[in-house]
Length: 121
Image 1 (cartoon, rainbow, N blue to C red):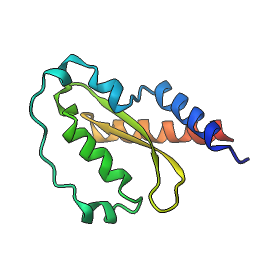
Image 2: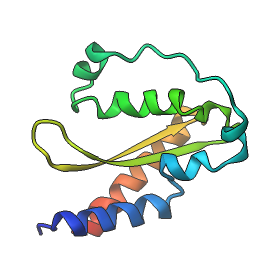
Image 3: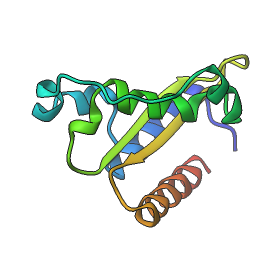
Image 4: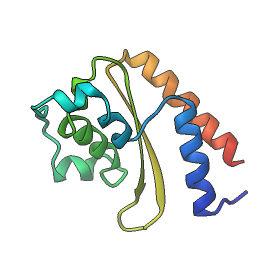
């Protein structure tokens, strides 16, 4: 079953928020982010973006976490974003998890992705 771009975005947003993911704008409203004055350094560059095989969408999540001072949150950070894929113009949803053990993050990502696929049919 094919979904319209609008339906995809609606379902993706609902699924992400059901699993506790937030947009960068939502996360930045946290007092810890407002009081953090220093970005976390990172080494994301154009080479990394080309190497991540999804047009830099994976690298962009890491850069956002560092540059937007989300490292100041001393709790799990579940970040999602809706992006336009470079070159194709297609809509994409990205899920990123920071500040949690790897195995837990992987389980959350798998369940969120599975739920999104099921919700889209």
